[in-house]
Structure formats: C-alpha cells, structure tokens
Length: 351
Image (cartoon, rainbow, N blue to C red; front, side, top):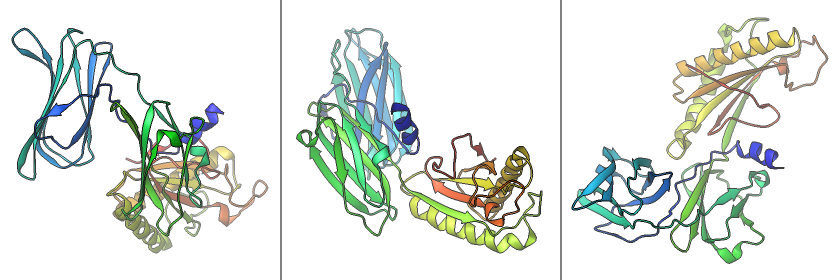
C-alpha cells in the first residue's frame, strides 16, 4: 500500500517549504516575506518565500557574540520576484548564542526591513506534517485527501484554474480532521484545475505547505506516416506538425505564468519487427517529432521515450502492420505522465 501510494505521488508536482520551528515576533516595517529557521547538526537553514516583488533584497543570519555579531550566512539579490523560494545556510558556532535574522529590500520604491531574534538553546518544536493521498484524486469529481499531523490547527486550500482564476479558497479547522484525514471536495467547473496549494498551520506559527499540479494536456498523433523502418519525418507531415505545435504553444502560454510546464513525447510502433528494434525506432521517431516542434518555436523542456510495441492502441498478433499503433503521444504536464500509455521508466531530455 505504501509503495503504491508512493508511485501515485510521483505523478504530482510536490513542494514542501521549510518548517517554522520558532514562532517569534519580528519588528521593523515588515518586509513581505514568509520565513522559517531550522537547525540540523549545527547547520542553520533559513527558508524564505517572497510574497511580493522586491528590489535590492538582502538577508543575513547573525550570531550574537561578545560585543559584536558574527555573520553566519548572507544572500544579496538585485531583484526577487513574488513567489520565489530562497535558502540561506550557515554554521552555528555556539548553541547558547542568540541568532538574528535581518532582511531588507525595496517594495514599490519604499525601503522595508524585518528583524527577528531566535534565543540560544531554544528547543524547537517537532515539525508539523501534511501528507497527501493522491490515489483518491478524480478531476471529474474533485476531491483532495490531506493527512495532517495532530498538532495542525488550521488548513488552507487554494485551487487555481488553468486560466489563472481562483476556483476555490477554503479554510478548515483542526476539528474538521477525522481519524487523521481531511477530505476537501468542490464542484466541477468549466475551467480545469491547474494548481492546488494546501497549507497546514500550528497555533504556534509552525507550518508546512504542498503544491500539486494535477493538470495535463494530451495530443495523440497517429496521422504522421513514417516510412517503414525510418525515423525521418515524411515531407507531407509539415502541416500536421505545425498544427500540433500551435496547439501546444497556446496551452503552454496559458499555464506557464502559474506553473513550470514540460513536454513529454512518447513514440509507439506496430508489431512488425523485433521488440528491441521497435523500441529503438520509436525513440528515434519521438526525437524527430520533438525536434520538429522545437523548430516550430515550442520553448519548453522536452523529454522523449520510445515504447515500441510495448503499449498497443489496438491489440494485434506479432508481425501485424496496424497504422493505429504507429503513433506518438504528446503530453504537457509538470511531471512525467503516468497511466496505461506510459509504463514507468527513464525519459531522455532533448538537448
């Protein structure tokens, strides 16, 4: 069950921010960032998420000393954009010394700062956790199953559609969790969900979040007819390739402001020839199609795989010339596609 869940989870784009181990007051004209500080075997880890575009951004981790402060870590950037996640590392010399976080920058021309102190010998609380059971997801009847740790006091879920609109913003309290499970459901809309963000907050300020990208866009091409045994694109395929490229560019332009999207190209053959030969041939054909799309101006990371006769669209015996099995499938998604047409395996990045 655990292995099955892990495989299912690999279909999602999942990110977890650092844990707020210290819930501390900050002073100054508060800079629009969310931050957390943790320690691991003497190494100090400062995680930052920017909540606004910031110019001349600088952040430091300092350790108090006798009459002066020791710089443990520093980052300076000319500009950071809203939603960036940054990390500053440092090595703590004395466990009894206070740590200080200082950040500054300009927002809309105004200089803002943030300063916070972490007392020495502070005992960090155990981290909050937020699990996700992706096996229950169904786009036709949206349901998100979250598995928060018992100390979670509040859960916030925001669903963004493929056109950038907010489809759902909902807050749940700890008492809504039953048996360690919280099922979040909502009505389907004409706009497909693109990005789901779930945050779990403890009452003392500790938090964790995950982002999920369940969206994908598939295009099946079975009308580009390669010559037998060849991976060279036929001369009459230019119009069809241009049509596919236009479709993929339009979808990429629509969703790329909100998520990092990639293209996955799978090639398939019929059962004429050996399995090994067909696997190599389907990979070369996938590369040919991917390169043609790149020439048409599709500017996203592209990955290719050849499945040969391993996955047939139409079941046949060996040595059967079946045009419907000689096809390619193009998938725009954040993570490698899964499902019947995409057995687990290694994808090759197109250079």
